[in-house]
Image 1 (tube, rainbow, N blue to C red):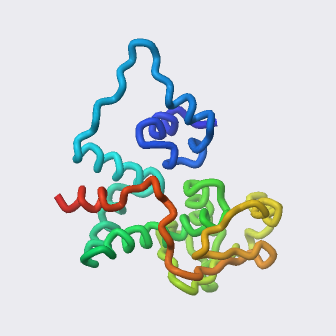
Image 2: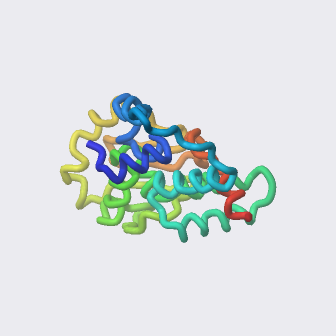
Image 3: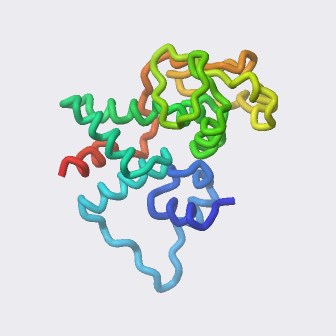
Length: 200
């Protein structure tokens, strides 16, 4: 069930922001207009960029300051590679990697799992969700967490999960690996619009 605040955010920013909004039921209800209600006015360029900024913030569960820092870091690379670097940095967060590996139902859930110390990276326990993983890093479920309820029946849970090509996870070994740099699969996010917003 979608909480009211999340439902309102999804209606404003689109279903891609939260996993629970990506359902037919949400799409149907969000597309209805009551009698006498007015369709939203066309957004200005600034307004559209602001919406895209909020999409990224809510999708990845990051603060305004964190988002600004990611933009500054990516902007050090000039040209066409700026948006790609921006995306790679967002996707390389440990909480997002845990989510992409299929170990959590949402990024928010993954963030809590990382904060509670359930994962180790290259043999070291990491409790910082924003920790940046790199090519070749090994992400494992901590020994003391392997029997936790949240990791029960992983093989069954991951059977039908389509994992991105840049990561892998072996449910038998309870470990994953970063195989390549993240590929842009979040087509509902306009990264360039956000970069333009901060360049004002």
